[in-house]
Amino acid sequence: MVWGDVSQHHQTELVVIAGNLNAMRYREDILLPHVVPFLQAHPDMTLQHDNATSHTARSVLDFLQDRNVSVLPWPAKSPDLNPIEYVWDLLDRRVRARAIPLRNVWELAGVLVEEWGNISQQEVQFVSIVESCVHTNMYTLSLLKINTVDSERTFHFLLSSGLMLTFLSDGPSNVTISGPGALEVGVKASFKCIAQCSPSCSYTWSVYGRTMHGSVVDITVNRHVATESFSCEAHNTITGKTATANETLSVTDSHWCGC
Image (cartoon, rainbow, N blue to C red; front, side, top):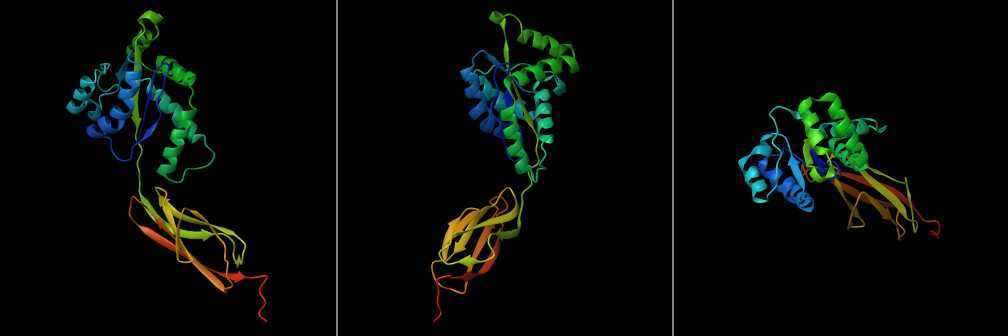
């Protein structure tokens, strides 16, 4: 899933979390590193999150109380009352508008983070206030009126929410090495290792008996040989699986004389 907070004048970074968000992870991965520091920097704000079990667990309530975090009471079964839902809708429309299709959920997560960063505070204010006024009931209207009264009595709310993603781990498979079809002594050649892998694989090369890391390597043959062999191993740190591609190329030497 991904998680983010918005308010009338601020928004946090978008946080990507693999797997399910239980009370412990909400406390340790969201509240402690992100929400509490943000609220401490803006002590006039009140936290608003829905009644998900990870939000209402006793350990979370005690955690927030111990840190003097003010939480806005929220009615049950009312997700549409939260103005951040319209920010999620804006984010969804921006991701869907991309011309290049996404190949896996990890690419989706990266695009979500990028597009979240492209959403301006003016857009947050517009969709969270105007759209809420259009689509929700008087409870939200009264909430927004509280948020927009004269500056001396303004209440500020940090609207916290998450968007669920399904993270599938797969691969590596179809490992291939792309690059020149032959080598020449003294001339550098670049090769790239590619694999179908979710999340992205790490790559380890074996060249001249040496180990090299990264998806791209540069190879320079400095001796007269007929062929040169090398390999690339793709490793998925989530599945623990590996797959290898091997390459043997002919080598030419324009300065070699066999006489």
